[in-house]
Figure (spheres, rainbow, N blue to C red):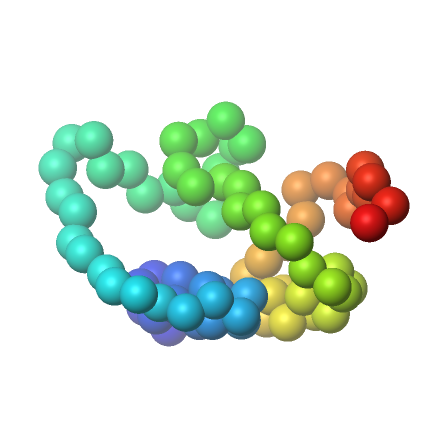
Length: 77
């Protein structure tokens, strides 16, 4: 699957809608390999509230998502 299609599938798996897209190019654009160190410039974190984290993780893993650390609950909401 092409990187663009992979990103779109990932976004849709989160239950989000794609509102638009654009192309970027130039020396400031960097593509990080799949196993890049945590401090590599890229979108390394996406945060959102979910009702069932285990369900979301199960849906995202087929798209290459993996946890860097562990799931931690900071508030009891």
